Image (cartoon, rainbow, N blue to C red; front, side, top):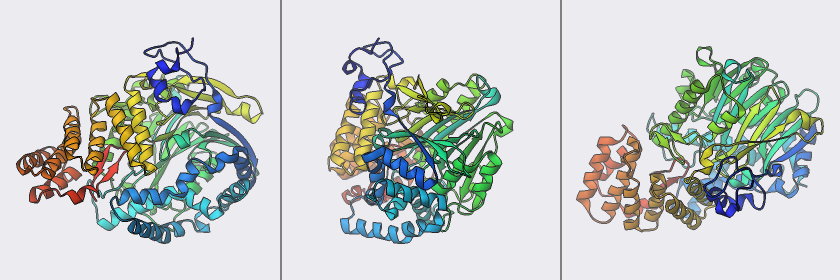
Length: 605
C-alpha cells in the first residue's frame, strides 16, 4: 500500500523537491498514511568502469555526461571564493579577493604540484579531463581535488599562527567536520561478518546526494577491483570504499597544527589504500611512506584479517590505534585518539568539542549495547541517530551522530561485497531508505539490486520537516544567498518552534540585518533548560549584546556575569563576556560575526 498521497505525508512533502516524481520507500507508517512504497533504485547511479586510472576515469566522465561538470565539482572549483566570504564577513570585496589570491599563491599552488599526487592520481585527473572534452582543465581539476587538503592546511596554519591552545579557538567557519564511522565484526555482528557504517559529512548537500554514484572499478594490472561510494563530478576513489580483498576504508578530517604543503594529498593516500592494500599491514605501509599535508585519519577494516585499526596522520607522521581491549568493534569521529597526534591537535570552537565528544560517546555506547546482534539494518539506523547525550533527548543536529552536512551515508559489507547507500535528501543520513547493491553481481554484468532497508525513524518524526528547512538554509548560505537562508530558517522555526538551535541561528541573522528587538526575542526563545552549559552561556551572551545595542547597559552586564558563571573556561562566550563587561558591544562588530551552520554556532573574528 502506498503512503497515501505523498503531499499528505509531512516528511515526504518536505523532501518533495528532491524526490520529484519518483516512488520512494516509506518503511514506517507516516502520520497520514501507511505501508510501504515501491523504491526507485535509479536515484543512485551505478557506474562500472575498467582499465588503467586514465581509462577508467575517462569512462567515468563520459558515462556521466553533463553531470560530470555539475553539482559538487562546480562548488569545489569556486570553493575559496565562498569560504573567504564566510571567514571575513563584512569585509570589502577587494579584501576578500586579495585573501583568495594569497591563499592561492601560498597554499593551493604548492599543494597541487605534480609531486603531491601519485602518478595514478594524475592519470585519474587527465582521464577525467579527456572524458569531459577538456571543459574543465587538468589544473582546475587538481585544485578541486585539493580542496580538502588546502582548507585543512589553512585551518591548522591559522590556529598555529594565533598561538591557540586547547580549548580556545580561532574563528573557523564551516570547518567541514562531522564524519562518523563504526565497524563491527566477529562476535559483535549477528552473522560474524564485518559491517562498516560510514557517514561522510562535508560540503554541497543536495548537489552531492542527488548525483550519488556507486563506482564499481575493474582496474588494470597491479590494482585490486574496488567499489567507491562517491558523487558525480568527484573523480576520487578512496574516501568511502572497499575492495575485492575485503578491505574497507573511510577518511576523517582532524585538526592539527602540524601542516606542510610538502606532504602528500589525503586523496592520493586514500585512493592508493582502496586500490592496492590487501590487508591492514599493507594499508599501514602505504600511509607510512610519506606524511600527509595536514591532519587526517583513515579507518581501515579488513574482512580477511577480521580486524580494524585507526591510522591517524599529520604532517609529522602517523600512529596506529587498535580496538580497546581486543573488542570486535571500532568507531571514530574527528578527534585524535593517539597521544602523539594529540600534541599538535586544536579544537575549532567549543561547539565542535561538544559535538565530537558526544558523537564518540554515543557510538561507543551503541556498539556496546548492540554487540552480538548488529546487522546492516541496525547500522543504517544508528548512522541517522539524532540522540543528543548532553540534552538526553533527540535533537535535529548538534551533538548527534547524524550531522546536518552529511552527504554520504553508507553501510558496507566487505565480506559479502555488498553496500547500502542512503537515498537522501540532505542530510543523507536522515533518510527513508538505504538502497542495496551486490557488487559481485554487478561485476558479472548482472542487475545487483538488493532492494532497500529502512533508515532511522527520525525521518518520519514531526521534527523532520524543520530539519530539512535548516539543511536548505545551510545550502543557501554556502551559495552566498543570505535572503534564502533566512527564509528557510524562518520556516524551520515555524515548523519546530521549540528547537533552540533554530531560534539562535535566526537571531544571529536578524541581528546582522539590524533587527535587534527581533533578534533578542529569538535569543530568549533559544534559552532552554536542557541546553548544555556552553549553549546556555552562548545565548545569554547574545542576549546581553542585544541589550547593549539597545542602550540598556545594566541588563547586559547582568547577563554577561551569568555567562562567566556558566560557560566552560576560556570558551568563546567567556572571552566575549569579559570584553563586554569592559566596554559595551558595538554595532560595527555585528557585521564581522562568523556564522557556523554545522554546529548552529556563531563566533567573533
